[in-house]
Image (cartoon, rainbow, N blue to C red; front, side, top):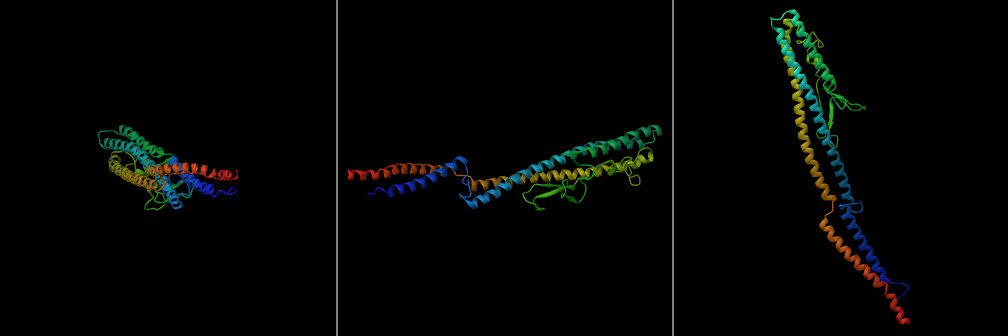
Length: 295
């Protein structure tokens, strides 16, 4: 028996420290729901998890970006629907002015409404915007895109992927101009090329019927392109949602704690800790037995 050194107590204390550390780890995992709470738990797993988390966050923002793009397309398509109504009314007026039962005064009245419709088309095209971005005035009709300045120019780049690969992470929305001059209708159009410049004469009204048909076809091409882009974006959102869900499941398998297994470990470590505390008390009482020999 020794008084100065109690190796039994030291051994039990070391065992208690180990069990208490394991109990603390189990408590932390159960309280956070995570198997990996620091790099010490699993350095490689932590690195993989953080990369997955960054991709998941980027993909979820990409879904919101694609939804915003759909809203933009719907805004443009709604305005084009109104322009469609104006073009149909203009064709109705051209048909009315093309017949010979109206005199010059009446035909000028028709011309007045005709030109007002053309001006309204231009106003709608110039006024239609989404978040301050004009959609139908030709700003998005360029074949080139430049995002190097604070305000990007040219066709619109819709970014939805987690990197910057043109085949996987983004594509462009290009919207042609829908002003009256671009469609070739009204007195704002180029008189040398526009067939629907005016309906002030019977001959001009007959030409305008052809020009208005061309304008309607041009407008319909823009709407068809926007509809195709909207369908593509909806498919993109479906794919991004699936990809994000799968990444979240993979990240969970790496990072999250198995509660059933960890609870088993917690109970075991709790029992071992309590046992070590009891044995430490017994080991600390051993030197007192030496006093009986002295007494």
